[in-house]
Each structure stands twice: as C-alpha cells, then as structure tokens.
Image 1 (tube, rainbow, N blue to C red):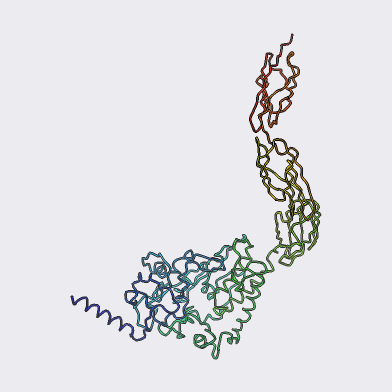
Image 2 (image 1 turned 30 degrees about the horizontal axis):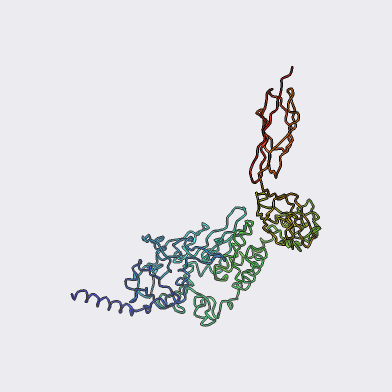
Length: 606
C-alpha cells in the first residue's frame, strides 16, 4: 500500500526539482501567446512531466513569449493567404503540426488528426543536451543541405533544419504560358530561405548578386542572427523576432547586428555603405505595389497590399513580377535578410513592367437607353497605348481613343476594344450584350387562351423598354387593368380581342391581339358540303365546313387512305382508285367534339 504513495512523493519531488535546475526557466501553463490548450502534445510524451493539475502542457515562461511559432495562428484550420481563406493542411502537415514535423523528418510514427503549435521539442530532441545550452547534437531534421521548392540547394549549417518549412512555395514557372491566379498563388508566408540565399523569385535572365551578409550568414544562416539573448529568451537563447516592440528596448533586438553595425539604434540607422538599401527597397516596393494595383493584379482596395484577385488569368511575366513582390513582402524582413538581392529583384521587376502587354479597359456614359442612343466611350486601358480599335457591335468601328457612337436600332450590342502598346503587344476586352438600345414595344402572352363555360387567364407582360405603366383591355367590357402581369376571369362565351398599351421614357406603344381569347359554352354541331360529290377519277372535291358553334380545330378524313387534314375548308384530289369513299369531319372546342359523315363516289374512266 505504501509503494504507490512513495512513488508519487518521489515523482512530485522530481518535478519540483526540475523546475529549479540550473539554466531552466520557470515552467508555466500556456498563458502567454497561447490561449487555446493544445492537448495533442501528449503524443510526444512531453506532457508526462510538463503538465499541471488540469493536464495542460507546461512551457518555459520566457522561451516562447514572442515567438510566432507559439501563436494561436497555428491552431487555425483556415488561414488568410493573399486575402483568400486557405486550409493550412493543404500546405503540408509537416509545417503546421508538431507531430507532422517529427513524422516527416525524424521518422517517428504519429497519426496527425488535429492542429497544434510548433514547440521547443519540435526542433530539439528533449533532454539530450545540457539545460540552457542547446547544442548542434540536439537538433532534429539535421541535414547537410535542404533542397528548396525551386530545386536550388540551401546549405547553411544548423539552419538547414529551419528551412524545411521556411522556404517559398510555388516557384514561378519557366514557361511563357498565361497563369490563372488561384488562392494559393505565390510563396506563402515563409520564403526566408529563398531570400537569404538569393535564389528565390524570378530573375528575368539577370545573374545572381552577392548577399551583403554573406560573411555573416554562411555558417548557420537564419540562426546566425536569430540565436542570441533577447527579450524573453534567456532559457533557449532564441531571438525569433528582430524588431522593435512598441518602440521600446530596441537594443535587445539589434544585439546580433551590433558586431558589424556598432552604434545602431534601429534598423533604419544602419545606413552606412554598402548597407544603405533599406530606404530604397521600401520605395521600390511601394512603386511595384502601386503598379500591380493599377493593373488589378493586386486588389486595389487592400491597404495591406497583399490581397490578390483569384480566378484572373494574367501573362506569365506579370505572374512572375507579382510573385517577386509577394516574396519580398512575405519574407517579413523588409530586405534585411538579403538587401542586395531584394533590391535587384524589385528593380528588375519594375523594369519588366514595360514589357507587359497593355490591359484593355473602357467606361461609357450609359449602357442602356432609347433609340437613337448616343454613348461616349472612354478608354481607361493600362499601358503605353499607341492604337485603339473599337467594334461597337452594329457593324460600326472606330480607331479614336475616346469615340462617341449612336445606336439607331433597338437591340443588345457586344462591344470590343483592342489596344496596342509601344512594345507591340496587344490586348482585347469583349463585353457581351453591353449596350442595350430599345424602343417602346408592347408584347404579351397569356395562359390558357381558351376554355369551356368560363376561363381564368394569366397575362404576362413581355414588353421591351424601361416600362413605366401598363393598360390592359381584356375585350369583354370589364374594367381596364394597370397591373404589369394581371389575371382575368372570362365569364361569358365568345372570342375576345386583347389590347396592351405600355408607356416608358421613350414613348407609348400598343399591341392588339384579335380574337386572342375563346370561351365556349356548348359542343359544336358538325356539318359540311362537298362539291362535286361524284365523278370520274381523278376527281377534285372542294369541302366546305358548315359547322356551327365555337370551333377550335378541324379534322378531315377523306376515306381513301390518304393523309388527314386540319384545314377548315380543304380541297382533296381522288386519284388513287375509284370507289365509294366515306368522308368524316370532326370539329372540337373546349366543351367537346362532334362528327359529320358523307360519301364521295368516284367512277373509273370509260
């Protein structure tokens, strides 16, 4: 009975002592950046010791106080990527879950079934080095080099591990085919390795430039500067954020830079040659952002300058320029990681803007109106345009930059504009049924249009124009209607004319449909006459309908096996055989049908 109690006491003492080992920071429940408990870390067995009474994971208080790795963003299933919602797991579980990283690079077996943050022991093997001094031997995923997505090699010591995730995605294609922009276009949020090594983006044939930090970063790349004492990192000695926080304690974040930049108080005081590129890089990026928004490759309404416009198709070079801009912006260092490379990349991208085709665009004073419809077209195309070719859709064209045109005939017209730039490249925009010119035209339909005894009919206005008022006359002496789509009940038998008068800003038009509605009250009486009713073959007989009542259809059978007829007064030729033929007529209305029969005698030739 005492055995378990003794073991519990020993375990408790061990946990308490572990909190006070030399170099160890205080272990605390996740109350810094993390506001959501990450229970999945139990799979790494860290929680066996590093847990509180609520079985929540304990972290060194200072270790991740300002690290993006420990931010709640890693617990989000959907991230904002270039202004578009994106499922982070499609990027790869290795960079968005602790277990995914260990599974991918350390060969450990985990089932990744949730999201969680990157922790100390994602990158370091736990308890394999001296506390407070993480040595090279403790690093996971340690390789001699890392191959980037663009197939280039990154080989910078310990940071080879970091760039498994901190590298640009979706490198620009080498082909010149147009690119359809999708939500995951661009380098994503972690292209630091491509910038640091100067091997990212698209160089438009320009050779690589030397990194001004080559002598600083060659040994361990990222970790040469992001590994030092700074605010909140005394335990693991990581300064993952080299930036000011609320404008205070700047020197703590410049510590790795002061060996070379003695006396600097912030990054913008590092201006002595040859490191005077930061301001010019800011200016270049601003020019490029303005140009990309002007061409609608970036969302003009996005003040951050990061939101793309998905589902648009743009030239290959335009996609490369956009990628280069996003690589700079999403690297996050504002050029400090590799100032010479970033400045060259942005300069080349701006120069390449002149080689892009124009973007044809236009506006009009109006898109609809009464004939004759006069419209002023205004060219708002992008580029150094030298020629314009307009097609107004009615067999009329123009080469003026801002033409005017009059549409004299009602209809919907497709407008096309083709522009040519000084570099000889062309672009066209076609807007289908863009202009609607109309005259006032009264049109309508009704269902049903006939019945027996009484009839309820729904009338549908199909008039053309911007109709302002309607006047219906149903032809049976009832009151007029001003509704657009009225329903009307006919209670007496007869055939009724229907009239619709419509009015709009263009004028007035009337449509009269004679005998459009038929209401019957009795089955018709069938009767007909045939002249002649006998004679030699071939015999031509004229049949005359003499039926009474309201009749909607006629069906004649001439008795000789020939085709029937629906004419009211048909003429038929008997020329097949001689004999006596029974002729029938069936007349029909909404109340029913009636039939009349007579004979025709056809004699042979003598």
